[in-house]
Amino acid sequence: MHSRLAFVDTLRGIAVLSVIVQHVLEKIVLTGQTGAYEGLLHGLIGYYFNLGRFGVVLFFFVSGFVVPFSFPNSSTPVRDFAVSRFFRLYPMYWLSIILAVAILPVTEAKEFPVWQLGVNLTMFQNLVGVPNMVVAHWTLAIELIFYIGCVVLFTLGLLQRSAAAFAIVVALSVAGIVLPLMFEQRIVSRLLEVVLNIDAMLIGKVIRDTVMAKRLRWWHVAICLGLYCAFAVQIFHRLYGAAYQDFFYSYSIASAYIAAGLVFVLFASFGDRLASGILSFTGRISYSMYLMQVYVLTITLHYFGAGENLPQWLLFTVGVLASTALLSWVTYVLVEKPAIAFGRKFRSRRADEAGALPAAQRSVA
Image (cartoon, rainbow, N blue to C red):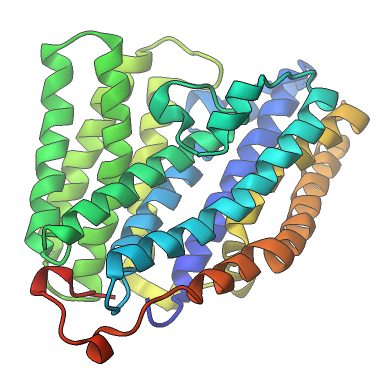
């Protein structure tokens, strides 16, 4: 992206705040002291909707809107893309791992074997069946899969073709609707849940090709979104059915996926007219916030608790949000932003300086 889109940062801000509020309210509900507020709070984050999954999927749509267009106009775009993504993700992620080792054994009595720590440092732990040191890190594996897919499509010359993205979304969605009817094994549905997240990212690209590049039409978006919604309903009905499981329920998770798609389409349609200054700032530090909220929440719970009544719950919620924002601004300034700038130093020469690139390798950013 040559210029920063304020509405994209606004969406990131909404996404990360949704995730944090979900985690905070979960802790409040789990105290068992919610009394008359039990139905309202539990319904908001469990029975009818899941704010956390809504926020995560909103992040996925944003990634699809941005990442496929991040291949630079350089002589080695794939290499430069990989370097850029590395410095965008890993330094802050490694800081998060260090904090996990330092904090979680004290606040949650967790122990991390050396082998688990070593694999988690790669960020590929989900892909090789090793448990996450921090549950929230599961989303990063989805991002990595998407990055790898973008590299493959870019190398094949398909990432630049809008019709290809549309066809892939249709194929993945139809498969996600049909395959659970043919295979009842839970592992199939679990794998298709990963595919659904990739589907959301690709729809983000389809939407960008519609609203910005004008290569597709809104009927393409409507078909993709309709199939995606049916895919979500099918998968989560298979995974959870009518059984409520620890804040996961077929209706609440499916509704979160559908709402994320609709909200993203709304913001993409109106663009920066829906941007918010405060939310855009939150969006700029959203990666730091996503990683740091785990430690702010666990420290606050360990030393202060979640509270016993509405005023205390409000204080707990505001305290976690404010502390997370402050800490994340510091880590963004001291770690994330410098790492991104450092990664730019490794970018190769521009394509027009090094000679014309093959058509399959030209950047569309």
